[in-house]
Image (tube, rainbow, N blue to C red):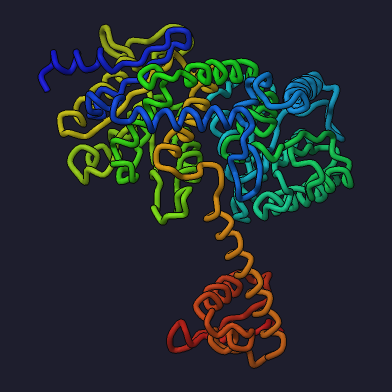
Length: 530
């Protein structure tokens, strides 16, 4: 494509929202000129489905619940005064509580005020808050953030060691809708033990964000938590950033959560347009659909040219992949839909995998994120007339051009800065785009049967481990091989899993299992330490 043709196509396809300082360029996604005509009926159905969702239709038939995360930034659109009131009251509660913490009115057991917080969650209860904390955090924030987002013992130790002597000035925010999520529950138990080891009352340093009547709510009441905030069944984890799940950690960090909500509400308004060409979320969904042939055959590579947006791709991984990765469509037909997401940041990507993007397998499209504002304060010239920000912009535009010259599709999002308003707008944009795309490919974006299957499988593994311990105790000093112990546990068809479990248990002396090597790894004998 000659330069003048590229410019003409850019002008024809550019979406511009000056009120948000936002632009979306899909001119390099090779969308056909008649896409709005050929996809008109599909887009209309997607818009109708979104309107029904906002009006309160049941969108998750598996759990027979509505999906209302859009109401979080527009309570007046919720289907009942009770829901609208709950949203407003929760926001007020978040702001009031965080203000009291900052002022020292809510204080720890043995210190004058809280200076840090530790958020414990998993998936949507961690990825959104972590992304926002990294994107919008400042060096002079009233509280420093820490996160436990796994059940890795060494990872837990690292985080707690990083807090160190400041544990007595750390507020713990436990986030779990049910309270039964193992990763979050385990992190809470380990953290509570750390407080107890310091002679501190865990409850006097903790708050809960959870569902009404949940196991976590009962635990919080029993242990005298400082406060409790609601998680509603109509807000899914991956779309919970603008509920108390994300707003409380952000507010504790001193981030303007009202501006985040305002940015999301403004973007929501733009994405209600019935004209696809004037609807940025519909444009995104159409670009994804065209790139992957409606079957997700190309990955989404997210390249934000801003350090503050490094975690954006991790946040989008869950939002996009958990929403769209489905075996069956709404008609029960096996379709194996989804879009894989991965990313880095510019210009680190230049030295990481742009080589493959330009010359390797053409199984992707790139989403560039351009941030116009370089920094707070004056720029510094690193050579005559050129700043570090100029280099960053040059690498973005250069990489974009190099990919285009190799026939690799890309789209570009432009935001004025990384601010609460623009971050809220990005969150809303991708939530909407995912919903629209799901409608285009006829899948349910609001359930996750694969995740539930994984949880059940994990529970079965832990049950096998319990049976192996019983078999080991029964066999005494004689012990047995993995094959013998699996049979004794009544699970001979699970010998491979038993082998992995026994190897890990024997590698941790505190579990009391001794491994006696054999001629081959599979001949090792395992027994209870005497």
